[in-house]
Image (cartoon, rainbow, N blue to C red; front, side):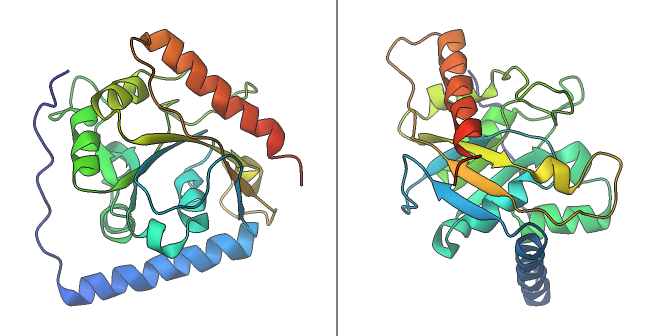
Length: 227
């Protein structure tokens, strides 16, 4: 699959802007821990400083914040969330948070309007040494089903960068902290459970791979409820 046009690197940020981004990032981190008392459970994989793709369930705009918050600082600095440009570029504040605070890989989700290939942008970020947090459901799950069917992006990225470990990551309880339509978070304990890493098998078909990735993520939903 062609990588297509690559993301234009942003201009160098002024020192004041970088400082403000660090301050805001620290504030977001403290707020996330204060509201959710979030803790990470490393089940099948250790918090080692290696390049990874964390693929997680998606029920809230704050999902990637919790994954980011439980990573050790040395890993957090190298980990970039993958997020929709249509959401994070709609205002100056969101743009600052998405680009400056979290250094997100911003992708265009509208197939008709997009000017660059999302898989190419993610592969480029990996080639630059980053780890990624992504949500293979493609959109927030507001149904009663535990997961929406996975989009094919995870498969294409895994096929293009076979050496990078894929770590299933289950986020528990955040949808109850910030229910859809609510603006005031409800303090509840959340967990982020990291499962055993996956790699694409030789000759594995797209559907077989996506089914295996979904099953690995769903298996963590049960473990997340255990102490």
